Image (cartoon, rainbow, N blue to C red; front, side):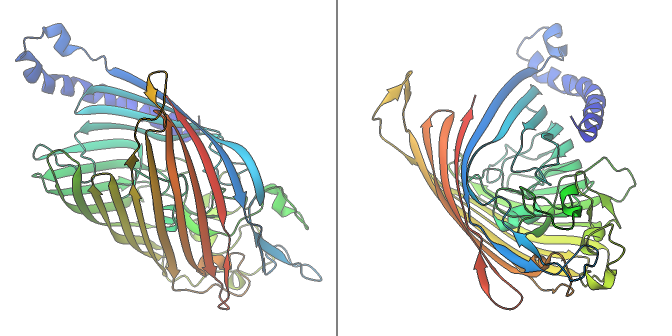
Length: 465
């Protein structure tokens, strides 16, 4: 477990010991009315539930190379470097083993942990990042309604730990990510979150978090290697390449208590049928923080935040003016909106984000449509139906930057226009076992106006108990 994970375990335990007596007292009135004994009411033993999930994949990635200016110490003659597909060709790989743990004292006091082992598609840099990652670790006091689900009435909740951003789509139907979800809310943040239900239909959410550092990754399955020791060589040829990259909100590196927190605020409106089968939820949100001058990024000699946008760290021979993006501030801000729509077996999720990254503007759009079809009983195994359902999915996403890099920027792809169409199908083999086959048509327009693609096929066998 990382240092960050150990720190948050201690924090959550401290909060739990404070909150548990309060929760027990709050439940006493309700349970006492049912005639339960004082010993049962005062018990602090939670209901524990554990789960395990494994993912095996077939991946076929197109091979591409795009020449860029030399970004190491100057050579004579200058060397040509490339942005290139991380790991082209066809590959079978085990991408993840995940342990889930939930502790439930009552509906209003819940703790949750999600720990990834291997974590191949989240590791960044892929070859040198931690292979064990605490994805989520949080404690919640109060009730948090799911999108497009009506609560019984007014209420609220308080959450502390490591958790997804409240605008993230958590019921994804493909294993891949769109451009917007990759760039802005793929990775969990660390801090506090508050929610308030103003009746059944209107709600508020707010957060104070550390803020994910701005780093770079390929938006396909593998993040790629950037700033690893191999790239210090004069003529590097690593097994995993650097990828065709975009800036994104990466994993938090350490607990930082300098007070420079990211502030988030959201206002939502929801309507739903009482049975929950149909509903709509609209959320507008905003986040802001100050970019750090430098953030050490484990496994890479590149720094994150402003240091990334200034160009590669540790290359004094290359003047900053030759590699920096046209920064005008140290502000990082996103404003946007979400819509969730559920209708019988279908669902739609849409998101719009307008980002100001140190004066660099980006706009992103993403929409996913999925529909689940229940299949008739044709065969069974161990008393369970074989192939009970199939779910086709299509997702479109776009990133549109409004800036240009300096001539010698090592990452001109930051400023390219990106467009991605993902389509696939998820087939449930048996309860707890499914196969998802998908194809990503990943297009981008270079600064000279030429259009290229970096497509990928991904087939995932997922087993969960």
